[in-house]
Image 1: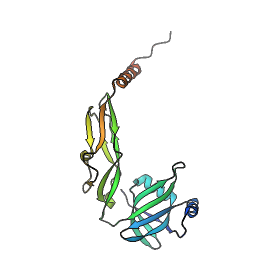
Image 2: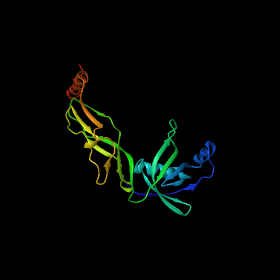
Image 3: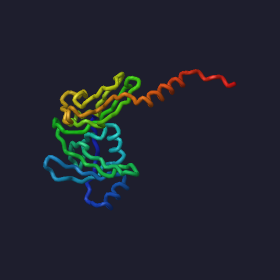
Image 4: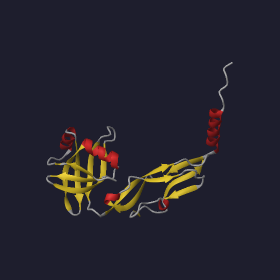
Length: 202
């Protein structure tokens, strides 16, 4: 995960009205807290922050330039409007270089399991403790060629060096199940129909 910088502005007005004015100005209300310091309120540039999250994920680590000083911060919570899909608010946590943080990292299932199987993903994220500047974007779990009856637990997911698993190692991440007989027959029929040459029109 790459480190990025954002210039931010302090906020002195609070409440729903002030938050709406901040968003109309193309900024996002945000709070920075942690390491025993008082919470600091500021405004993030909306377009730039959205790009950071898109490129670095929801665990992005940002160097904030605020009033002549800089602070390293981990994106902790992003509140998105449920209908209009814009970012309403962001919470950030002060971190120090070399410090370990506990984060939820997305799990991406890759590959194609054996024919006649269904892949069920039970966990979308795995929680780990990792150095703040080395948070992985995601964990990949391959099901390529895996037969029905196979289960992959959190403890079987490969972690990068220095990362420690926080999620229960026995927690089920992915299960490869046998496809129900009716569904398997339908799938086989569809494949046969696709492979059969089209008959010439009479």
